[in-house]
Image (cartoon, rainbow, N blue to C red; front, side, top):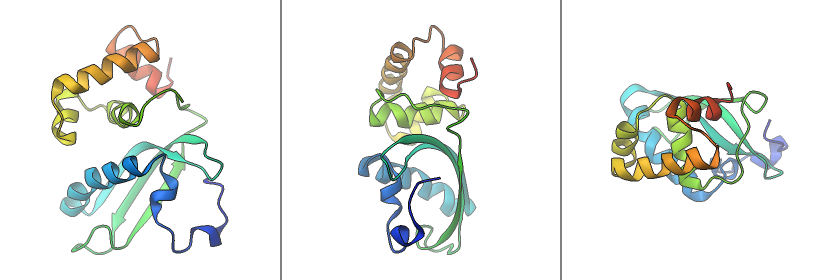
Length: 148
């Protein structure tokens, strides 16, 4: 799915599977409190193949060490690219917010989880709507999920 040979991944950080180091860090920060509290985590996010192609991926994992969630774990990845395409013109933050909107989170909840103001999230939502030619919030969600 990622286009790497097994030996290319041994000993590597998951960073190589993310569109940017910033997205890797922010995703890790978002996951940590949830996986520490529940032991498991699941979401849909944009990942990067070896050939640099971005694609939507459903990620599910659980920690094997309750004391240190990032120390070891079991993670599964499901390629969603056949159902959902990535809009290449989205910024890193827009991709992050798009993933959270696609999960059904409200702007207020996204703001709280990302430690941003609701107004900032609304600004990014507005930019997403313009870039994806969405006329309503439900239209935006449909376009993010590629249901329309």
